[in-house]
Image (tube, rainbow, N blue to C red; front, side, top):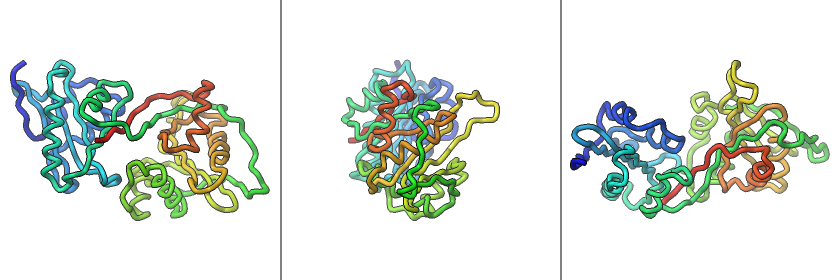
Length: 299
């Protein structure tokens, strides 16, 4: 293999690299979205490795607006150029870029598929897991549909995604389950734009109230197409009041309602303890399936 040339990202590199790289798993697909020309707002640097003028690898490091305490990093190398030090060279260059930039001193973070070559590379580079995330498909009827407790004032209702109350409940939940990578202090308007707007893909929301307060909520981000198979699942974010007692029971009731007739897909971080307490037994029983598992790793 000829000596490689390393240079900044430029127009057309995405097309050239996509011709070489195979279809990406979810972790890689998210990483590729970070590749872009150098930018200072938000700060980002991408480096490309060329073999005789042909791009064969790329790496990026950049700031994250929602989780500002760490920098996102991603490296991908064509299969026929792996195990040759290309990834390590790119990572070393990215670390130098980060050390010289305005974000100097912040650790790198990356997302890798469990058991993948990327996970092994990250471990060899000194990045350790700080969170595990699973995409779980819960089958129809996985939970018995129970009644609401009238003595506790429980009720289920639809709620507009533009609701300030829902936005606050979502952000309180999100902040509580991300203490391992604290989010920025975003205003509710920005939170709604990022998580609950039409641009974010939010279609609708349902909440379980207890004594008038939101105890648990579910937001749909994709609905099966009209011609989709009957077992097509909706993509749902299920959150809850992390400060209230009895939250696990509320989560179970709301999830049972969601999967009464149709399956749903949930993103489940280990930090979402009440949701994990409901879903993990379903996985063990075979009424829910883990579709993918990724790790967030960091220096």
